Length: 181
Image (cartoon, rainbow, N blue to C red; front, side, top):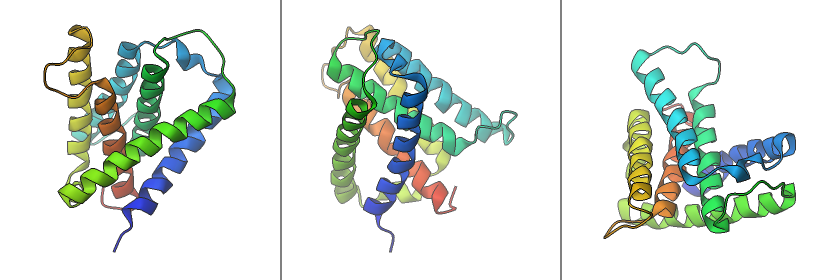
């Protein structure tokens, strides 16, 4: 029997390591990004995954797993930016960013565990293509919410969509690690 909890933490640890190393290399240059810019960065990565899946060929060395990791990290950036509520040109200490990363991921993981309870880990039978498509759907939803000035009538907000994006990307990474994708 697989332990989703452990697998989730392992996938996130790799993402977190990259996130912190990039923060060391680039500082918190991402702080300048507005929501639409974060969405577009994730969109580029998800669309690249879909294109590689469809063409069954890639010409740039970055692999699909790396793109899913990038999606996780940009979605965490999106959540942090929403929480801070103002894009800014500022450099923050890596330790501060590490704490924020961990807080956002812990919240996403809790939602994943709750949904896993109710859905019985249905994601384990999903295809990598579905994860890419669902991430694209979530991004298009965020774009529509932005067009609607951040308002929804009945639907979840931007933050919930980012959380789902994180969890879909982590699920894809887990299944790839298991050799199923």
